[in-house]
Length: 112
Length: 112
Image (cartoon, rainbow over all chains, first blue to last red; front, side):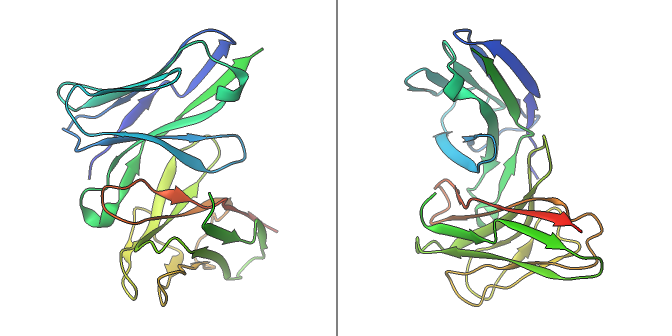
């Protein structure tokens, strides 16, 4: 099945700094979904990208899907303490009963 | 998220004991999923089900069993064959192939 590698595993930033996490695959992906999991919580869906080169924004968050559909990124501008948590990318869902394959996640810590 | 209820929130298992984790959803979703999450790691798929009375093994099904007798319910049994059951277990559901997964609040299972 499809696999996605996510980097970095950890990221510590000062409040106000930017943050980026990357999701990479050796194969072409049908889509990318991004989830956020707050400490002690459960993953919450953020967005889905399906088109080559697609860029979507949600306030301070910018999501990109690569031209070759083999990589994706999530960029947060001017982090806030409310951004802390683990960010996961996931792919799949279009076939195999909607089964998703998740990346390992990037744990973001924001220091005030 | 509202609509998916996992219970109990915390569970302790004795040596050689089977325990069952409950997952109920009132979202009228067809597909349901069970994931295991270990500290600092991503989500690994245990079992998934697209319709009632049908389910498929995920990537780490050994030592686990499920049933899907009702659309709303997808309980997971952690059997004594699972030698390292301590983890955070997440249940998810979704309505259509292209839709995101919605997660419950999870159950933390520990060994006594």
